[in-house]
Image (cartoon, rainbow, N blue to C red):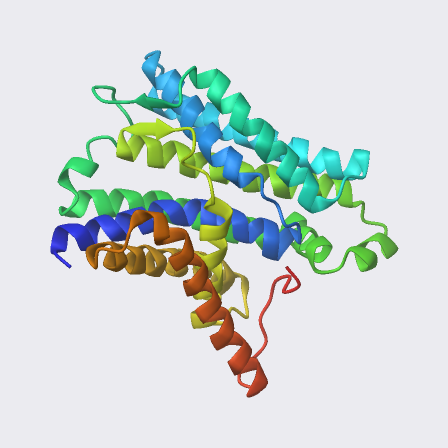
Length: 297
């Protein structure tokens, strides 16, 4: 692998680590198997691209995209808490609706940002330099530190308690609804942020770019957790970052070995299964150690 391709792989790993942290937040912290990020990722990419094409400031367009994703997560939470729809079906319904919403908003299946000023547009053309990695690392680091700090606050601790055991939190008088709204809003806001940044880095947005995102992010989470075995919040948040970089590296090597692009989903599933098997083997041998986070989903 050349220096340019290695640098590009790390950059894409860091960018996709943002939605991977979002998926970890939903599955491991909130205890909600949310599939909405598949749609929120595309929604964030589409909204930011539309606004950028209308000459909005880059930061403002990105913030609006995050807001749109946050709203999608709140809708998922309300479907579950108010209408009593199951967690999984709530996410599927909103994810499906977001595909149509994104397509309707974009007016076409893809948009090009060529010639448009974006937050990361100039970085992809010089992938081997130190500036792209430094910039993307800074952005991902800010998201990481923000989540890490939040999860150590009083509200964050209550959110983690809700995710660990719904029955215990209800017994102690904690209502689940506001925490689901907070957790899923943050999850899908981060997914939308990841979509907006990836679209601005690549210079285009496609309505199917979020398809399978949750599976990819879960694979990254499993890889990272198998390696770092998180027993505290910092390591828990670091797991998807490390896992996504490794995942992107494996996919890059597979493509260089002429693996067909159509087989990448199979490679993703196989990679996730490999690390699940390693983790289960470690548990059987009694060497797994204590890990935090909801381990039931």
